[in-house]
Image 1 (tube, rainbow, N blue to C red):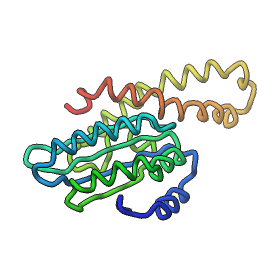
Image 2: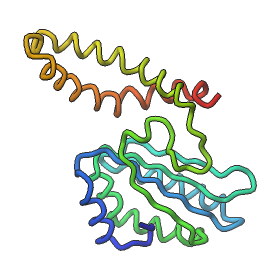
Image 3: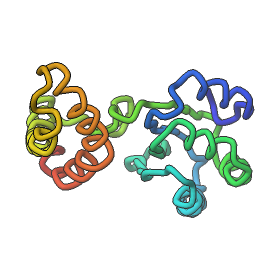
Length: 196
């Protein structure tokens, strides 16, 4: 779906996803030559608009390398419903009108589930994913203390339950903690090491 799609088609696409799932909107735009500074100003304005949207979890911008003109904007939301509110808002429509005047028409727009952006957007042309062994090691280093801590906290309540049932409440807490709290902080902290 492109950004030019109608609000009804955007709503239909979002309805196909669970309304409470986290989601990242990934938008790639090729900017007309000579309009980069103007687009940067609009990116700042867009970030300020997004910051006021309930459920917005953060924004990332991947700027083009020298000689190229494709920007990638990543907006993370804690639910599909929050993303839909932004997509269908009049503020976004007005902002897009000004942005579209700077774009040469080559736009891609994707929705990615929340867990896929623990590290880097896989399809982003300007980002190289870290080696898998580094992602696995960092995930293990972050997951182990979270899992053990929550296991100890829950032990007095569920310690007498059968093992498969004991694991369920722990996982219900571990997955959101890793997605929203731990991995965003850990990947920022380890960004230099991941890129080396």
